[in-house]
Amino acid sequence: MGSLQLKSIRKAYGSHEVLKGIDLEVKDGEFVIFVGPSGCGKSTLLRTIAGLEDATSGSVQIDGVEVGHVAPAKRGIAMVFQSYALYPHLTVKDNMGLGLKQAGKPKAEIEEKVGKAASMLSLDPYLARRPAELSGGQRQRVAIGRAIVREPKLFLFDEPLSNLDAALRVNTRLEIARLHRSLKATMIYVTHDQVEAMTLADKIVVLNAGQIEQIGSPMDLYNRPANVFVAGFIGSPQMNFIDGARLGDKTAKTIGIRPEHLGLSRESGDWKGKVVHVEHLGADTIVYLESEQVGLITVRLFGEHRYAPDDIVYATPMVGSMHRFGADDRVLA
Amino acid sequence: MQARHSIFRTGFVHAALIAYTLISLFPVFLTVINSFKDRNAIFRAPLSVPTPQTFSLIGYQTVLGQGDFATYFQNSFIVTIVAIALVLLFGAMAAFALSEYRFRGNTLMGLYLAIGIMIPIRLGTVAILQGMVAANLVNTLTALILVYTAQGLPLAVFILSEFMRTVSDDLKNAGRIDGLSEYSIFFRLVLPLIRPAMATVAVFTMIPIWNDLWFPLILAPAEATKTVTLGSQIFIGQFVTNWNAVLAALSLAILPVLVLYVIFSRQLIRGITAGAVK
Image (cartoon, rainbow over all chains, first blue to last red):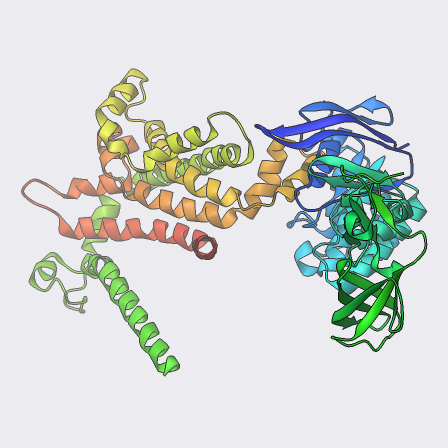
């Protein structure tokens, strides 16, 4: 109950192609996250799955049934929007129950399902209030509750945490993770925030310019990025990219190494450099150094370190931590 | 320095607004005070308020006794209310279609509907009259309602479509996912959210209709279909004008429009400022 299949989905506005042939399979119960920079087509793809936009070509199947011409309400999906999109003139209870009411479900059943969802999200005290009387976090919980009540085959989340402040974002993220575990439902989630993607997903789909760059588990993408784009997009601070020629590598055009995979020493090492700037974050220390051999690189050290600008240091990559990319920006085997 | 400057400025703004208010209200004030005076006093001292010597209700007695003013009021009410309702309904529907759906000729259609703001409907009076004669609608309130609906629609479509663009797409999409039809989305989600704009349109539509003399005179001059504005004209003769009655009738005609205005005005102020700061 809740698998999804996309086959060569294309979407064009006039001559402008937003989605350039997307193939994707989502298994029942998976938590899949679409991630990518703004304008990469991830929201359009989600809307196409929801039926709010029609694909120019290609097929969408939910549980093996073609839904290309099925209205959004009949697809067995529920969606949570970035702007909450609650009905301003209805109470929390009516907001959550409207979908079932439209489907003609009996009153008692609606009451029961709304009650269950409300207690799951600790919204019981607010059932009689209107959205205007709730805080941002509560509104987003109502929006999530509205989705739960429908018991959909697919949950669709469109950047649900972007409008919340940092502390609330973490809480709501945990809540969504907990929900996924307890409901065992299939969830598709769009975000541009890689931390959300890494922490929530079973499977991440990295999109760029209307195409899928790579699909994989968070650790797959981190450890084995398929190309330069994914390597740069996943991980923070960003991976260092070094010209292959500068390291004497004949086959690789670019060599990537993550900041946390570099060691730093004052005495000796592979690449000599001068510290340009240091960021002390408590748990980490981020050191930027300008090296003659490899240019400006970022080093992430765990714990506190007393480096200061203009110090001369040596950076050494850990064994086996280099990613080699060819002339087409794809990883070399 | 800054504070003094702004006090001066707000003072100036207030003075200008007060002056404008006085100028606007003066004719109304004059009408109302003179409607309570006898004929001689109206001519001898038109600017003075009624005194015990000059106070007289003769105008009101004439109006309520002679003309069939209850009918006239009723006609005015029916025409105004029904026309506003139709303008709001059709205007909002057209605005929704223009702002919500992408279709070929969308912009052109919007321009076509808005162009009516610039072309006065009275230019077409002869054709309208011929049409009404052909359709057997002369001397019916329906004729007036149809004309006023046409007259009010361009502005309504123009204002409402601008407001509808500000209603969040996510909200409408949430409705679609919850299984609301396009009609329910329009009536239950969008309309309540643009209520201030609807009130604005209602007031702008109502006042010209209530005050209009032209179309009632041409299309529905029969006794049974006279509106208040037309009805008051029976006291204006070629040689003798019964000013008491005219002024009393006009004073009475102000009241209903005032009531409607008060009903809409709360929403109206929100509507105007919302448009101004966006």
